[in-house]
Amino acid sequence: MAFRILKNLRELPSLASNFPVGYCQGTLLSPARFTRPGNVLRFSRQSRQPPRIESFAPRETIGPTGIVNEAGYIDPSKLWKSFVFTVAFSTGSFIGVTVWEYETIRSRAMAALRKKLSTNWFKERLRSSRQEVEQWRKDVDEFWSRLTPGERIFVPICALNILVYGLWRVPRLQPMMLRYFASNPAAKAVCWPMVLSTFSHYSLFHIAANMYVLHSFSHAAVATLGREQFLGMYLSAGVIASFASHVLKTVTRQPGLSLGASGAIMAVLAYVCTQYPDTQLSIIFLPMFTFSAGAAIKVIMGLDLAGVMLGWKVFDHAAHLGGAMFGVFWAWYGSQRVWPLREHFVRYWHEMRGPTKK
Image 1 (cartoon, rainbow, N blue to C red):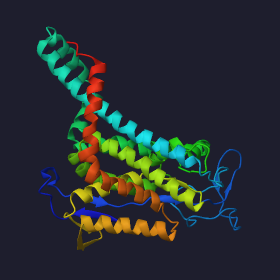
Image 2 (cartoon, one colour; image 1 turned 30 degrees about the horizontal axis):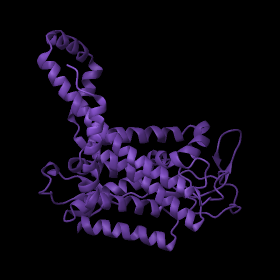
Image 3 (cartoon, rainbow, N blue to C red; image 1 turned 90 degrees about the vertical axis):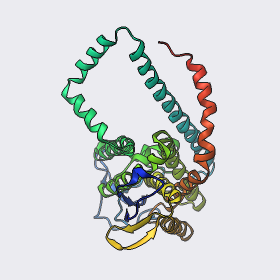
Image 4 (tube, one colour; image 1 turned 180 degrees about the vertical axis):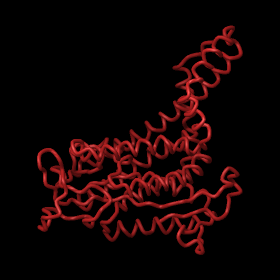
């Protein structure tokens, strides 16, 4: 489902131009039958026998289908491992973007200081000019300068997702992709797939829809949060959504593979809709019907909650709901109370880095 903005936000002048808003759902991958001629996994449509384990989605899915050796049993004790990794990775994400923010400010200050004090400024300027003459670098610089702050975050994330999508197309890599780029609480590798799966898409429609939605919301979210805080929230939301999926699968004893950026994107969507609930939206194919962003996120989260309670198997509703809840949390509490706490770490990092050298 895709939306578009009908009214501009007074609180955010940079959003004067309308931007499309979208909602995309990930998938809970269903175990289906694979044949394995050689080392290549191929889907077999000839066999009509029922699968050995329960099917969690229709046969036509937007992700890879296949039986893996680790898909049968979920050890409940692994939830602690997933929980510890979720907390550690989320904390590490915010520490990482804090260091990035500090180093960016520091490097800009040092560049300005050297430009003002250096006696060899003219030679350095000539050296820099010779490098900028290269046509490829000029083209990249011009392209990058035309991007909005939100697009400068979106482009690397999108490029990484496209790269992983391309890796799925290599038959020899599919066993590795199934192990590390699809989240499954029954697998031997539990932790890192919780992160890597948020950059993993098997279907062209899946990645196209998710990247469209991310592009739609990234401008508003980055303009409000800043690129560092946005990236920390996005990465943390992805692993939190995976953990929510693990919890539901463990409780219901229903293993399965999940992949896609929908959980992290749901956090971005929920944050923007919570911050600007009065923004008027409409379905792109039905522009005559309008509704507020606040109502939209309530309906979306309500559907995902119903999917969790009623056991719908088409999408990974637990991951969607976990990501959306984190986005609402960050809008109401995280950006005001949690993000400012980074100042304590910044002071420690500044002391460890030592004084600047001229």
